[in-house]
Image (cartoon, rainbow, N blue to C red):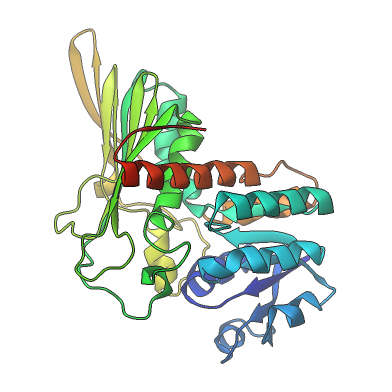
Length: 346
């Protein structure tokens, strides 16, 4: 049994980490850092509440720490955890700059500790389905890949750290981190990046919309986010030389976790039949259209992999080098948007 310490019990810690950790065999949520209150212990009896990271790191039984705090704290907290000899999971992004991320990766190598970044949306059912279609070449070579997070949230949230003008804020660092990671997992590093990063809501001080294009020799990956989608567009749209795949709707795990549900049972992460994506293929001038059952999503797979990597049973799935590529792409996208030009990936 591997004892886990969770730093932060806000939205990320409460919805995306604690219920997943407690659902994975071989992991035990042993302690949670909460500055005030004891909500974590009320939901998870037996969990120890501590008031500081230093107090948490002083518990020798804890072998793995998860950092689920505002982005500006990630680098400092992660550095302390690695230097204290703890294996580490950091909520995305694991740093607010490539330089910070590179330093953390170096410390992890030098201390021999596992460092992973919580890219849970690799285990969304819709993305798992897209990945399977691409790997099986079901559409032929891909010429256009679109991935959207379309939402209707026209009002700002005063006081929310994600909307404050500080390093790591804004939607490119938030949802963009997931979209970039997914695209690069499918297609690798691009040749170049072009982007339009903007503020669409009145009085917004950080980006709340973007179009980022990853340019490959024979295809484009278009990543888009807006908060003004009254009519939600497709989550995924792929055009290949032999077909098209269109998928609407979001993986159901996030809403289930927000409701306080705990992962488990055969129905966890399953999508309704009505939400299946549609694959249209053209072979020998014969057009065929059919629904593609969505793979079951399961965020537990992330923590199962971290557990197995610590025990030496499996390679780590989300490695620091991939997270550094994401941070590099974010910085190039911001440069592209500011200069109004395409930037070679470097």
